[in-house]
Image (cartoon, rainbow, N blue to C red):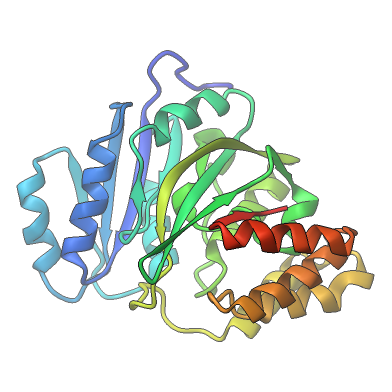
Amino acid sequence: MAGMNKTNPLVSCIIPTKNRPFLVTRAIQSVLGQSYHNIEIIVIDDSTNDETQKALTSLGGQIRYIKNERSRGAPYSRNIGLNEARGDAVTFLDDDDLWLPKKIELQLEHIQRFPIVSCNYIRIIKGRKEYVRKPPVVSFENMLYYNYLGSCSFLMFDASAINECFFDEKLAAGQDWDIVLSVMRKKNIREVGIVDSYLVEYDDGLHERISTTMGTGPAILAIYEKYRTDHDDSTAKLFYLYNILPASDSFLFWFFRETIKTKLRNKNIGFIFMNVIKRLFGIIEVY
């Protein structure tokens, strides 16, 4: 991309964390263990104590540590990281997730073609692994209806694409979805590229999150209103119903959401049952 150092680009990794020194240490170690090494790590500590800072001292001096004056939430913390980032590419890692060793290396191969890159991932839920595979590309139109890409931990942005774009600090849910839509709309990016490899272990447990609580319904409605002019009104009700349903590990909820998604994407009912069979083997395909 224009302005990017293509031979040895610096990659910024922004990690927000709060009161989880063991988890953030583990997350940072997964960054240090990457096959690609030109990475700056920026940790934004939203904690109310000094335990995180103490834990990070054992990891050496290559980590840039910033502590919020008071707890402000994940969107605020990520925005602090964006203001501090000096990389040619920008990535994020939630403190409870892990990057697999080739995450950065393989995504850099794609970012020459796509200003935003995501990847397949392994979802950890109640000790069980599910392998979530995405299509080769995801369009802006796809993203309008539901969050194809998921967590910020999967994403890489060309720095020129995310420049002057920030997380909506009023949203305590759907921040990852909103930032992609915001960047794509502002920079007229039509597609996100997907690395066809499982590059992140995503912890979908029930532990406390950094963000303050906000009802899913109001958050989804807020995102819908922001991009309302881009939506087809005939699908608005289905959009809201799909996104307000909890993405739990309940088969019933999952099946109901897949049925709605099938209607949104004009797929036939046979497509659902094909995904049911795959789910039985721990394979989840986002379509």
